[in-house]
Image (cartoon, rainbow, N blue to C red; front, side):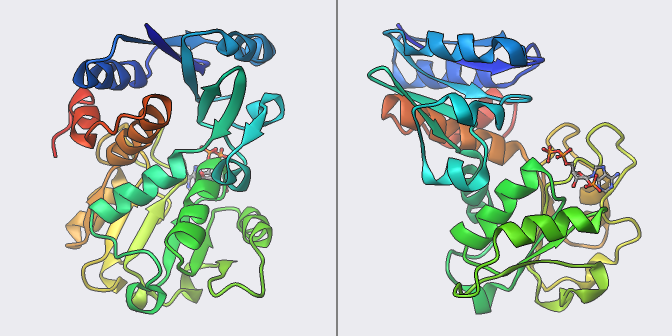
Length: 281
Ligand code: ATR
């Protein structure tokens, strides 16, 4: 069989096995996908085991996405730019680090009608909430993949400044900058991406307390990378103001689709992955 793994700690509650097993079944491939709990100390040994025959690759999740960079034989441009690997592709003994979170987010945003790539003026700037690892992927998606200006809003402004500084490029058409809420031209904003962990452990937390969502441009989308819970306070408050809001399930499904495609060459419809998540669409 073709074999793939998830390395994470904890690993038990991952939704990836259900998605990839459904994809193997849909593709008619004899494949196995197993979630393995790997501690940081065990990561190098676990990665070495991916070099065996029959192993197509692996996914990495917390706490390995950044630590793995140093142990791989090559990195894709996205993995290098985001500074994180969520997918490893095994190519004849070589392990190549890929990041399908950012293109997965891009695809999810496009599927929800968040404009198109390269239409900076028409589609307006992107607001990214948060400045951690997830935000780094979101800024890459907005700035490089969607080609929009990006405002980074974070509880700790200094971290937003650091993230913006990483992308500083005076020659580029699009810029990332740290911003307070009052500095953002909200009437031009059609896309807000929550990449903060607010609401993840405490459903009453929101990265935008007291925010007036009616300030956003008509037809705006609030995309929350959180998928557990399925509806966050941020989403609830956006919807209450008549603004479209979606959770991170579509990004989760898209990053899995892109990983499976890289491993097997089979582009399984995203509906198969969403179906395994208990979602619709
Ligand atoms: P990850 O790698 O998942 O992005 P992280 O690096 O811990 O995780 O980043 C978490 C992000 O969520 C940070 O931007 C954090 O803000 P701070 O930099 O100020 O810590 C943000 N965050 C977490 N809880 C929050 C809350 N209650 N309100 C606003 N932002 C919050």
